Image (cartoon, rainbow, N blue to C red):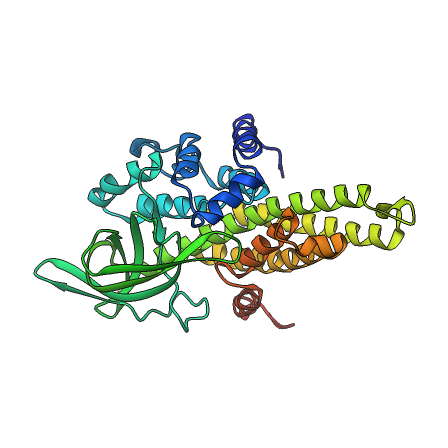
Length: 371
């Protein structure tokens, strides 16, 4: 199998890498966190690179690219621990392109592609424990207008979003809706997450909404799988950079008049970090390559990948901090922010324990010596 990237993919990687290196340094990131965890200016810069329209069809103003390009982009954004939610742009572009009506596409896709419209997924409910099929939100249609009643938690950039994609029960079946931020009955309570980004509680009370698709479960499952693949790729970028910073520190930090990188026990720990990183990278490739597979096969692959990435993220993050010693715990030093980001990503779109359960459940038909 050929794992080489095309010239176009390498050029895309290079463009994002240059922007992260020159336009999104640690100081800018800290200032964005201090200002609320999201920057419209930075998001517009990412849109100018075409990243917000990566999964939007060309006919709708996007780039019409696929999962491998998405993986390349998210890896590079991970290296800069970029706060702006490109994962949500990927989800919104793919979902609206594949499941929405022509009218809904025309209203939102060009804005998503240009970066003028930030549309985010609002699926998490308290008590659901990552099970996206558990939905207490309700939708009622009266006089040709849908209205929603719902409370959604941990909505990415909720206070800054221009619209929300909301799953709700309609006539006993899960459906997907689009709710504009200026809709009557909509309110948000925003807060910072541990990695310095922002999220919000979304409250909808008799809130007008537009139906995206009446068959919402396949669309929502697809959205979650896109989110998992993007999170895996982003985590690889974060771990790659965390390892590089750790090695650099060990080569300069001295004890007993020699660099700590010369200590054999510490070198073994760095080798273990590298092994976990490469295992995570291979599973991220696996997830991206399976993203266009049939739904059942795709969901199995995402659960496997996210479980392994969760294990690798925890190991690499913890070792990075420990090998730095006390400075690794300080907010002024960047490695602590890599650790926070990895911790956040491990819990996004289903943590390791949840994904292990998904892997186990999906093996029932083939488990055992008589399979």
